[in-house]
Amino acid sequence: MSTWLANAVDRGGATNDWLSPKRQQSLELLQQSRWPTRKTEAWKYTSVNMLVDATFAETSDGIFDAPELIDNLDSIDLLLVDGVLRSDIGDLPSGLSIYSIADTPIEQREWAAEVFTGAKPSKHYFGLVNDVLATAGVLIDVAEGVKVDRPIRVICRQSNGCESHTRILMRLGSNAEAVIIEDFAGEVKSFNTGFSEYIVGESATLEHYRIAMNTGEAISIGGCHFNLNYRSALNSTVVGLGSSLSRLDIDVNHIGEYATAKLNAFYLLNGSETFDLHSSIEHIAANGTSEENVRGIVADSSRAVFNGRIHIHRNAQKTLAELNNRNLLLSRNAEIYTKPELEIYADDVRCAHGATIAEIDKEALYYLQSRGMSKAQAQIMLSFGFINELVDQMPNQNLAAWLRPHLRRRFAEMESTQ
Image (cartoon, rainbow, N blue to C red; front, side, top):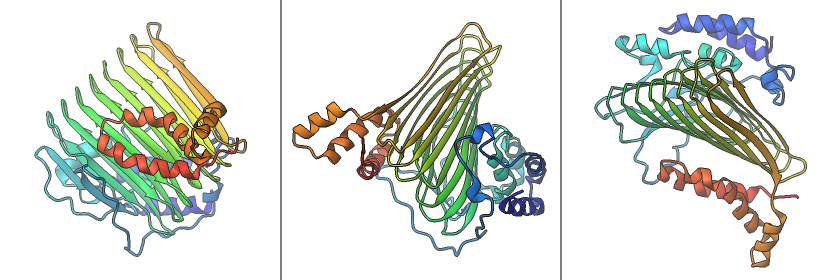
């Protein structure tokens, strides 16, 4: 067992709160599981050796920068620093309840305990770590029939030299609607596990964003996990930058008939960064629909890993599922590992999957340069065109407008060496 993990297990065993029964189950599974290595299929291309003997502080000095505002978003902002809620929740719209996990009222604990580990599979090693150590975080409950007009923005920041474990639990009642933004960013040396679980009720709609913009020395391992019920709908967008180690697992479980899921994701990597995205869509009930589009741009000596799996269970007849991964390689030193998978046990379905890796179009680059653009400007235009379709598909265009200049700055750093 690694030094860091031994310390984590000791801390987890000492935790005593209203979620302790669930934490104990995960602690036992964690102790029975093997530390991920390159021989572990799910971690074949991503090493976690940097964590073996790592040491991080468990608490910070409490000093943090105010998060960047997003023009015209009018969001309900919840700031978590090192996993601890630092902002006042304040007045909320009728039908919306938000609590710190540490201060959850007794009357809310029964359903919250059910949600905790209810959508996230136990196969995720660092998900078990998060189960054990995430004593803070937020609990969000949307009542039946309630449409929350303002987006809920959960802002997660890490202090230099610290580790944190962030958890988001959210329940949408039948016919409810909500927008949530998971905003992770930072570049200082730190370690964060950030996991979220969503129970989307019958005919409810969830618009979800994971902004995974940890860079530099930040180590970020997390996951987003969804249970979709009868006629519920999910529209999710993931934006990823690379760091010394960035990993995100996504699970979408169609447990009710006629559920629909749309997942768009794109990642931009430079330097020696790593971004590892694993997704699993489980079609358990019939008449479900899922569409997943993932695009990556990889430069310098960075590494991108994508594994996307769609599993059609025996009773999931009339399923429509598509998965597509496209990658743009800007350097011969960069690495891309992509593995789309279909596993089908029903016989009345329509499914498709595919993956491509291409270099930047030299003729298009030459054409733009011949019209007076510098190579850098031409490259930014072509790179932006590669992912702009997914940016345009973001339902919240105020968020898309805020994101575009960040992407342009990122493109400016990613020089093609082809």
